[in-house]
Image (cartoon, rainbow, N blue to C red; front, side, top):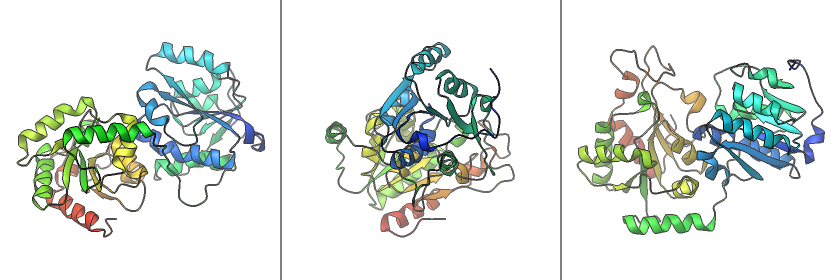
Amino acid sequence: MHAAPADDQFAVSRFSRARILLIKPSSLGDIVHAMPVASAIKTAWPEAHLTWVVKRRWSDLVERIEGVDRVWPVDETVRSWIEQARRLRAERFDLAIDLQGLFRSGALAWFSGAPARIGFANAREGSPWFYTMRVPVSTSEMHAVDRYLLVAQSLDIRSSGTPRFSFTVFDRDMEIIRDVCVREGLSIDRPWIAVNVSARWPTKRWSLDSFAEVVDRLQGEGLGQVVVIGGAGDRSDAEQLRAVAGSPFIDFTGKIPLGCLPAFLSKAALLITNDSGPMHIAAAVGCRVIALFGPTSEIRTGPYGQSHHVLTKSVPCRPCFSRVCRHEPELECLRRTEPGEVVEAARRAIDGSSVSP
């Protein structure tokens, strides 16, 4: 295989009715960040057919993203990716867009047989070698949403106004949500506050003792029922929180399917959370977010939009983007944030005042 010339351009007008392959398999937050690209493509080219390649664990969410004509799930294994590459080639795509920017995703774009393949010039693991068009990124200090939209702009697709995040809510989604709410005693149409104490990285986790104090104060002030959310794997976190919290809360961990999460969070008055996938879903559906940030950058991956508030503390090593903290005192960027700051931000958000930093 020969490397594609860096300056290779192609006429974009022919893609108005094209079969387009969008490769963004993970992670949850990154998938949400890519939504405006799908929306921009379908707005500009409504007759184009858009297929989204995604890891199977996230496919239920992508099924609800407006503008996606077909969801193409892949499993985690290399064998699965090879098998899917063969099947994708038979679909005769005209254009492949790689937003993942890794060797595996770049290779999948090439194996798909799409004659036009686009990705970032600074993508990792040699993936730009697979592209016929490389999109430059002038700075790393921009939000992932805006960075992904550079790809759309390179195709002469200009988004008008604010980037669009739009989920389709199936009838069964609200049925599932209301059934769970009845069982768990949540009045979903009254003010309630979602809390997410989990995160994939240990360095992204604010202490459970601090979350417990926030839960106690929110309920003590009558600001709304507190609902702890998360996947089935986060149940132990909720159990540990219950052990240290002085007031009861409703535990929804593992009870709301991923595909129903956009509809569910759209009903919340507020989400208080670590840097996590649910944070991005909440922001996408218009739920106000108060986010605790430590090693990661709110500029690059904070909750998108103006009505959210990120709490963190400036330390010399932040952002380090590390899953292991080597700073003394450990996790100072997170732990210096006091529960009272979170409660005050929540109070102002619920009162309807601006919570922007």
